[in-house]
Figure 1 (cartoon, helix red, strand yellow):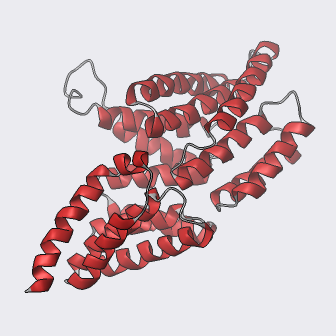
Figure 2 (cartoon, one colour):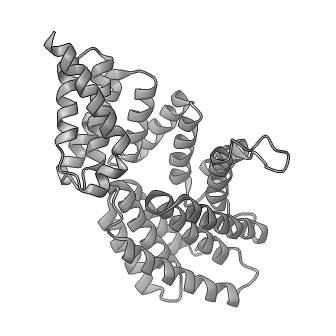
Figure 3 (cartoon, rainbow, N blue to C red):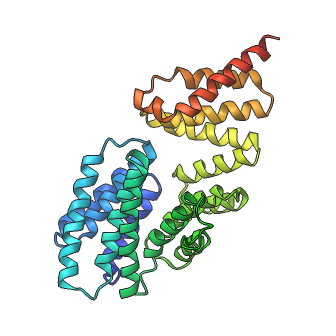
Amino acid sequence: MYQNDSLRGAILTGIHLTANDQFAAAESLFTELAGEHPSSPVGPLFTAATIHAQMLDEESPARHDEFEQWLTKAETLAENWRKAQPSSGEPEFVLGAALGYDAVYESRWGGWFAAAKKGLRAKNHFAEAVKLDTTLVDAYLGIGNYNYWKSVKTDFINWLPIVADDHRKGLEQLRYVIADGVFSKSAARVSLCWALMHDGEFDVALAHADTLKAEYPDAKAPLWIKAYASFHLYRWSDALNLYNELEQRILAVGPGNYYNLIDCAYYEAQSHNGLGQWTDALKACHKALAYPAPTDIKKRQKDKLNRLRDLQKELKEMVSK
């Protein structure tokens, strides 16, 4: 994977397509790789990764069965590779990556406990990978994410001497991948952005998002980061423009399950309200609340929809005065 120049080049091309939201082209490339290299876990792993990225982009688990089938194939082939070459770190990296993708899926659509268990197993595989081969810098994407989110999710007990707070270490590990990784530079930068915003460092996250946007102009991920950061910096006009752009990009391919459109309308309403544009804020509330989202999406967006109803009530009173 790392030593084969043509394979590495194909993987990097597919990753660039995926990062630029060109999921169909990336998936076609990776399934072709799977056919050309039937004993390698690389094609199945990155096919699963592309489906995973598309599900996250659409906020929909609709392709879960395909995702799991490709992951299972990747894990089986990686286990065979590990048995044949026990001193190689690459099969450990593949096993860690497969579990890592599954852990993220669980955190989004499953449960936190299942995600944490799979995340720990992924981290252990990544740690073994770098123990066997210190050049596998990409493994620190998984290790860094685990160290950061494990620490912030358990910050209520991190004062205990037996519980390590590795959240700063996690950030540094993500920066290490951005600097020296091969396949995971952009993923590490996206991860770092969300971690920085969780820490309240919105300006720093914005700078990283600008770098991502320059490299992947068709991607929505940098826009989501820029919009969220701008909103939390009270840059209402910037946030409004960015959420409007995201909304238009989503509608250009179809509304999907309305999860992302509800997000956009929510922040549009709050941004208009911050600017004192009450009539426009009220229109954004109406828009979000009128979306025919499925029941499961309304449940996932329950907090935002309730806040929109409260804001709608307040704005109606203000506009009518």
